[in-house]
Length: 263
Ligand code: 23J
Ligand code: MN
Image (cartoon, rainbow, N blue to C red; front, side, top):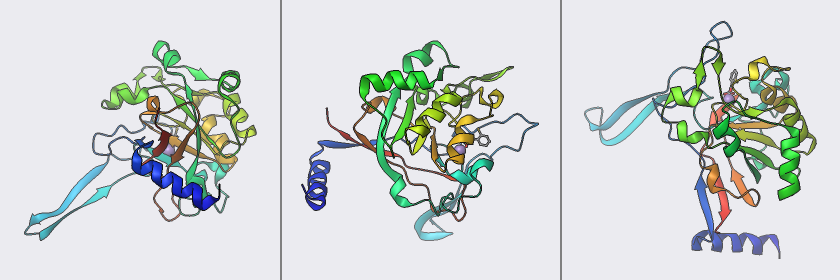
């Protein structure tokens, strides 16, 4: 089938609903949970603010509009290579310079929800990824790898989403060897349902924050705070996640979508 015929068929299947569009983004607003770093480490991203300019009133009689105060790394968002010191020198590593082709790619979804339900500190290892591949097929070059934890069920409460105690945050993520392995396989990026691409305990790993460190060192991408991964098949869906074209941006909230064949 020619590319034109294939795209025509895709249009037909989208219109009939045989290919569904699944929303992988969380609602973005003042209650959106935001990352809290240890106070000695850094300054946190500010709370989201949404201000009304006018709403059919004396500030604008016929129109409603708002302005936002919004950190780049807020809610469901994309991490660009320039976000981390290891990726700082890639000219195509900013939100406005990443090739747009990379915003549409096949997606692998590794279901860790049972493990995470029993252990909030669960870490996915390279062996865990290989065991998944033995069952579902190899991770291909240029594909996303997403860790399903069903952590989005906690996102209405910042305390539950961050899940911190006196020892720090408890949330699942990848090991160093997990990220090394998916990069060897040619993955375009790694995404999770937690506040960031790294586990709560990742500050103590070597290197610290291995998902950030290694992905961005390889000029690859991250996605955080994804929703609805329980609605995706292990393989066969296509992920669309495009950051805003922020000038020299390090990341951006995204409306992440998946194209999924109807069961
Ligand atoms: C800044 C510093 C550490 C981390 C992060 C941001 C994120 O998770 C993020 O949103 O990229 S771990
Ligand atoms: Mn981020």
